[in-house]
Image (cartoon, rainbow, N blue to C red; front, side, top):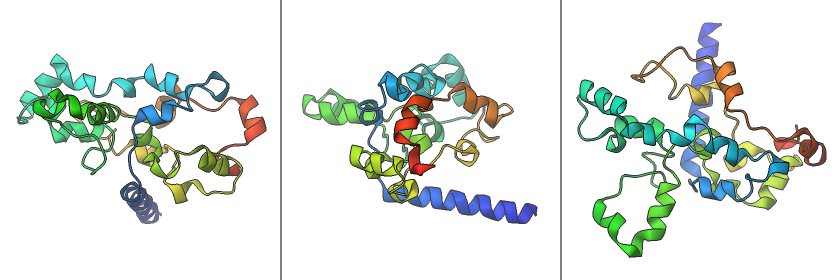
Amino acid sequence: MFRVLTILLVFSCSVLFAQQDEFSYMGVNNCKMCHNKKDKGAQFNVWSEGPHARAFETLKSEEALKIATELKLEGSPHEAGECLGCHTTGWGKADGYEVLSADFIGNPKNARAVKKNDSKANVGCETCHGPGSGYKSKKTMNGIFNGAIDPATVGLFAPEKNVCITCHNEKSPTFKKFDFDAMAAKIAHPYPEEFKATKGTPGGK
């Protein structure tokens, strides 16, 4: 039984990573346009007040610097790949967060690119729900709500435990016991029942 469960977990993670390669990261500002309205649950606002929205900034803290020194990481933790993989969105992907040079940031011609990159700092919406290029449009989201479109086909997935433990695990130097149900409840940002009554739920479920 344990072997079967292990195989299923590996398979689900493989599907997840395959989806991430197929679709592109857009950044939290794209999510904000539709998910900051109170009648829909203001998910962006809830995220903004939670710990994931400050994940990148924690890498600049004294505690992070101490950990980086103990681990003998090269450079600052907010520029180290060992840390950025779990403190930013899409790190390591062609369209994910990247460390930009001072010259690039200082060039006015690159202001738009810098802003877009900044929107992928922290653990954003797409870290937990999948790269948004496939489901960003209102038409696609309506299709997902009414059941005409399978969320998985456009890269949208539920933030289940297997997604969270890619970072919340023993490999993290600050790891503590991870209670998925308790932690998920703390950052929950569902659609209001009134909204679901008229729109249904993603996937028509």
